[in-house]
Image (cartoon, rainbow, N blue to C red; front, side, top):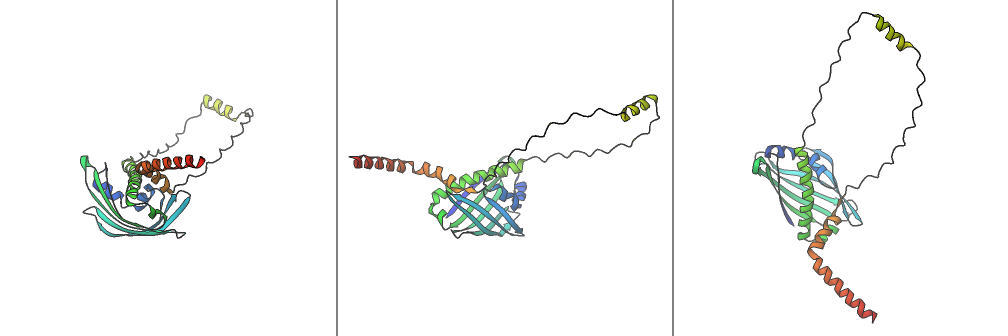
Length: 239
């Protein structure tokens, strides 16, 4: 199935293009994705997907088969399969950048997607809506990274050389006070016990949570009709 997306970011096209060369940074912005290796135009990684109670972990690789720095476009072939044999996924992604309004960047992404297994039960319309939602999360993360200001570096202070001072009566008195025995310090209160760490949140891509609102929005009339039919049947059976 073919999926098409467009989005814009406020940064200039050259800066945006340079950021897209960092595959590791892009993977951090995509829910459930983790880059395991990168070598030249080839990379490998995993994507965790939750489909209700079912957890899928796709392991695969991708290759830049065409990249044009002058035109700010590239094409990637990617493929993977679930580690438990529950399905496969393959995609050919073509991305193109162009100068946008107010010095920003317009990005177009066209994906030729092919999935098998349980995720394949959703039609193209649902997959388009779900991918739109996921792309929104990706773009929000991408904009945050692109517009983040670098942290200012504090200058390192050079220690001043000590200056020898002539001894004075006041200095002798201060030295005597410093060497005099001091009263024992009061015992410090016991340190509070460290808080119990919270369990780490699952960063898997929750496809079920993304699909459910789409299904409710698109098929609520059919669901309501089904509930009415069930209510009528229940009343007939109770007579």
